[in-house]
Image (tube, rainbow, N blue to C red; front, side, top):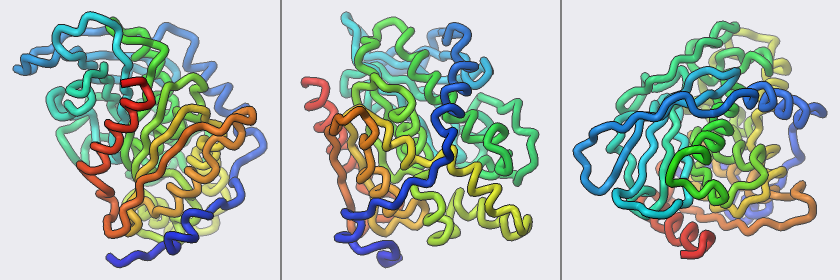
Length: 330
């Protein structure tokens, strides 16, 4: 697929006007207040993985309205001091999978919490273990359109709340330096990490690659791939509800979360990405931190001109490892 979005020079200047409702902050403050009324952790059980250099626990924490959310928590075997914790969010249609699948961050010496996606896990990977008991509002079969006609009923209200609560849960786990929590994700996971950066003011860092939910209206005009295509298909059947859907989507717009973020941030995007168009990543990057009380958070963008949704793959991970080590001091 040739490049289909804005030329690189225009991407670097791309700063669309924010598409956010007047009650954006109130909406999320009230949502998180309701979710935070109880202690985050439900259970923490060790699991046998066959790995000698990594210890792993099966964690259940309280997410949206206290719903149980599953996660894998891992530490380097023999760790003797509290470690920075990387809270990772996975892509659309995936679950947390198996505990030995994602070892990069724990092998780099960090504590690692991998959050399951509620109501997902049936499209890719090795499954999930977290149902979504609230997925009853009108909408299509895919998560991206569940509850699309109401901000309060929308799937991503629940999933973003889970992501914020995952950071709270990670900070309560043994072996974690609670002052150094990092949010990480690709695709949908990148959108969740960016939302966490906008809603959790004291993150140590955020790493976002090919983020979903950024520049949503433009993405719906550019691509029929992936989650955006599911939304377009829904609107092709339910004609006349576009503005209602756009209003709901404005409450989960990644650019709005990016504007409120304060942590140092590393972004990545493939300039031929037809799933999460690069203009969305640049819109979030270029407006990142602009509402953070006059601060100018350190941020960096890695762009891959000939890559699509896969981005820089292992090269991007190598850049993230070097960048995060510098941010956290080695």
